[in-house]
Length: 213
Length: 217
Picture 1 (cartoon, each protein chain N blue to C red):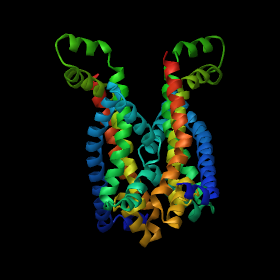
Picture 2 (picture 1 turned 135 degrees about the vertical axis):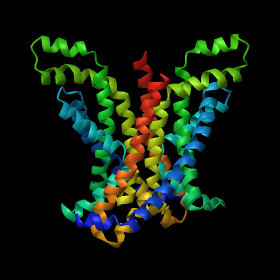
Picture 3 (picture 1 turned 120 degrees about the horizontal axis):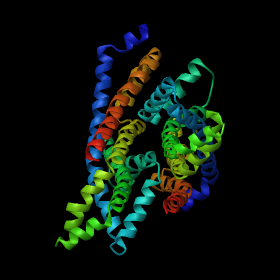
Picture 4 (picture 1 turned 180 degrees about the vertical axis):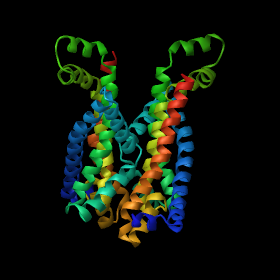
């Protein structure tokens, strides 16, 4: 393991950087898109609710790899030349946004409806009440699940390896084939993943406990 | 449109269905194995046996926080270096079972913790041993409480079998790749069909879990 660490340090750090970068970009955009569809689902308009439901159900029930490969194969053919990293991150964003939408929706639903009514009764419009009163309370509730989504994102970003996204998993494979020491290469890569995910998951468990009390 | 009609010829659809069958096989075996192992691990973690529970908890946490793809690579490319050479199918099932058992262990443990402690006390007061009370009273209620979570974990297991494409397991996505590899006009029709097949299975399961949850609640 020490040999792998010292000889392939720059590759590993590069992989870690790409994994983190892709996860953070995907988290930001999927939170935005997910929140949008979550709001669709609680709107009074029936059409919007159906649109929200369809989006969430479709992307929750299709494997991430299928979505990522779809973008990796098709966007360069018809739209624009993009690299594996971009295609993979777009796939990650769309896949995760459906889970985040579901989380945020349940957050909005668990905010007391009296909050919305009170805000409306005080002269706020629906959008003002939603953005200033309901959503801030909903987000407080969904912070632990969002954290867990980020952990999933870091783990799921390993599909970037499949579309040549230069992430940790990709580097791990190339190190394994260069050094011929598969076991130690994958163990080192595993440790790198754990450095990100393990502390986060313990912290999220701690947060959940604190919020429960 | 012609592309779609050509792509969905019976030969291609049959080839995709063969792939789907492998996906289903891997999923069913992994679901059964990981439910049993996961429940045992979850209970072990709950009962607080000195050292053992802590060790189980630590291993479960580590596996849960690794990407499944890394575990698949490890079982397929790593294990042969330790003197054990699994085939592609076995390596996939092994990796899925290891990963999903850890996920389920955590779900089962949370379920047991959510069962009112009075249930355990009542069972013990009625003369059951600790193991009897756990097995007959607490565990069934814990599973009942966590059915939606367990089923959604199984849904992600089914979706995750697509990761085995990377070690060329002849499952659904792999067969689709073979078909569109021969004719690039088939790319869109193949992705649509693969997405549709996964969607039907996973969506049906999620509806089933909602029905089950309502019935049992």
